[in-house]
Image (cartoon, rainbow, N blue to C red; front, side):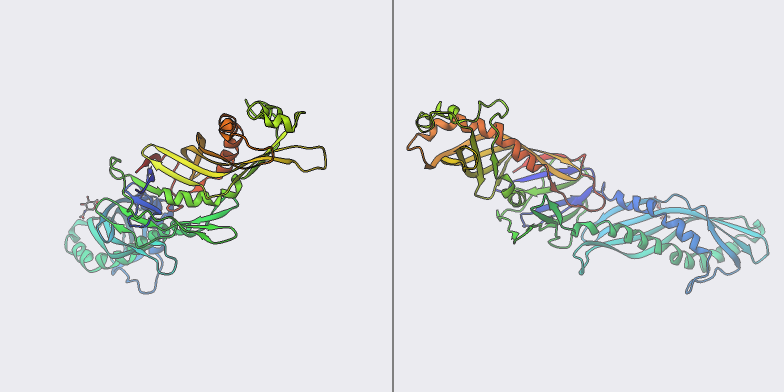
Length: 443
Ligand SMILES: *[C@@H]1O[C@H](CO)[C@@H](O)[C@H](O)[C@H]1NC(C)=O
């Protein structure tokens, strides 16, 4: 069974395939980025400014000199998914074309038009990033009004429309569509950057295949690369299942699925940082960490240390952490050793009292901060406890269950939570903001 964490985003993105890593479903909400790109880039205004200049290959408008384009209307962009292709884009706008007419007077033409194109979604062969490429740009004239004297109408205007405006406008406006796509495509660029997970390694979201467009969303399938700082990439365990998006999200919304296998691989990067050595005698609500306290559970400690000594506790995690998910509940399993030693006088190393093998589970709560997945844990339970070695002779380790459980909760869990604060990076693309995402744990 594949377990996943689903972030329902207030944006658009999607993915599908049998790889166990991460899957993104982009709804129409994310595609607002295209609208924003058009607004932010002021592309139509730039095109308009260019229009007056003489450009190679641009046909002059017959009978008009000193041509200028002004008052470009704020474009309204309509987008629709085209299954298997990408996005159909319609930019409705208007503008005033001014110039000197062949009659010598000032002329104004107010044009309302639609620019339409299909933005095909591809995977850039060089970078592996998603990429939109426009095809079949057309300019549709919605209305044309002029200030020419009415006795010249309609012949001149009609001729003008047919022979010139229709030919000139695509060359003038279609580059705007391409320029907007360049702008949007650039917003995918960060996706390829390895993002740090603390100092232990990096995560990179690599596209598995060309994103797939359906009638309602674009799906992007990731094969994330979890790379150790010094060492190999961590292979994701394959559960054999295809991730599926849970039902019931708002239409047009975007979702990101992260599998337990992927999160487990990321946590493996942090394994070393979960090793600690604690020398404090007073920790939270715990009784003093001394051989005297320990003797209350194992009388043999008092025989070996009649005079109470401070304790040093070392916890070593000796297997990669493992994350499990069940509907609504996620656990982090840690396997390792707890070694308690008595502190001796200055200059002498502590003496190991015993080493215990432990397996315990932590309950995980997820949140998102600064586009990173944050995890906060609390002790679920001590799953198993066994004695590996002892310098004080045989004792029943079960007598230490409460002592160790309290110790893990009070002294160790805060250390784990501190380390987890580095956060797990989420895919960075299209200026996505995950902070308002709703999080669900699903099977
Ligand atoms: C222009 O685009 C708008 C918005 O998509 C649409 O409602 C209108 O029908 C289009 N007009 C023409 C003539 O295509």
